[in-house]
Image (tube, rainbow, N blue to C red):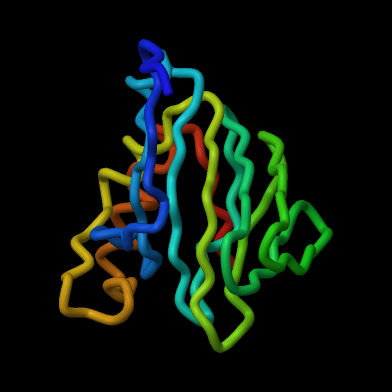
Length: 159
């Protein structure tokens, strides 16, 4: 196969080595690698895991579920997703996801335009190699997320 300038071959099977809000996280393709057009991330979600409902004002997201099951809230609608499902989350619409099974779920997430990794950088933590599950969320992580959300034009919908 010829090497195409600017092309990448990404191995999506590797386990993330970082956590955000108790969810395993890897940045697979950065915004810098796509001229800002998109980012590609991998999430590994333990049973019961998921972020609070939130609204992105600048970006859209697309999920491709690789393994497990998640419920995805989009506005007022909940979609139960199984492996192979592709879910589009438009900007300006509240959304969240939750692993509703007793098994780990994983999915790929495209973010367009690519500007969400900077948000995650403010509160990501290591996922130690000897730990079976991502580093659990704590109050400090939530405080950091809430402190930077507005900077990234994200509304976190709390209570």
